[in-house]
Image (cartoon, rainbow, N blue to C red; front, side, top):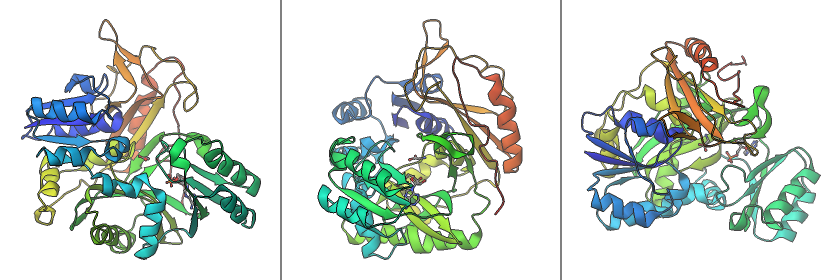
Length: 421
Ligand code: AMP
Ligand code: GLY
């Protein structure tokens, strides 16, 4: 088969790496990819939101299956445009992607179908939102409705902070039309976890769950990022909790989407808060997580191509999806200054000096004139190690990370350092 992967981050490098392990796969193209994907696939200079060029390329190259990484591509309606032309694609349709691209839609769905989530009210009028907020107690959460590259959620510790966030979103329009509507939501405390499931619109097959670290610095300090590392599986995900997540959240959500005329095919990603053993949804995403894909897909033992085809053909119920009992830890190495402004073009060294079971997934990298690897983005690499236990994987990854060097590099030293309780 010929595969096309859309996207250029470490999540997409992981997808390419995993898909390449399938005996069914002969050729893989990536749009646009990075220096890491170029080593195992063919990069194409196409933007992930340039749907027309992606359609054209998939037809011309006779691609058998296209796999989508980023939410922006899904929200543009890539799946609909491929399906109309009879092209196979793994990714949610535009109307199903609303579960991620509109937080108001997701909230209304959860409220209508009794899917556990934080109490919230949505507003399209700035003055009304402001009045409501002035009567609330902090901490409180303000969320822009639309896609905002992970920046549209503000957990405010005081009401003035929340009012400022509201004004940024609705008055200054910091996220453009994504801020036409807002959600004001109760603050939930507890432990966060990302859960994933394959869905063909009817059947739900849970994937490995993972924990993600969004703040830039150790101890969850500093500004939020796209994710500085992750590990799988979460030790606090007991079989009982997994059952609750499946029966109270993932299955009802897929059923609800079906009932709403938005059949959900692809990967459903739930960002959950676990408080006193009970899970509640913070958000849904319509795709694999980044950096969660880097630590969950390596544990998948079933052929990923087979799973994706079974999703597309509505026969997921017949698939036996198996996972290794191992653990994975992924540490993101970022450019100095990220998630603020940073410089690029620095040489990355040490990649050839790693233990043999370490996998480096590239994100912001490009090849230099002599084939050397140069930095070209905020998040540069995810370094991933596997072990029999999280402690073993963690030890392996942190033995290797310091061997990789580039000017200004920073990474968290506390990924998968798990506090008891
Ligand atoms: P989201 O994009 O909705 O997952 O929000 C981004 C981050 O904001 C989450 O990973 C949480 O850390 C935090 N967050 C979102 N909603 C809440 C909430 N209701 N209570 C506490 N923290 C939240
Ligand atoms: N890990 C966060 C995300 O993929 O949205």
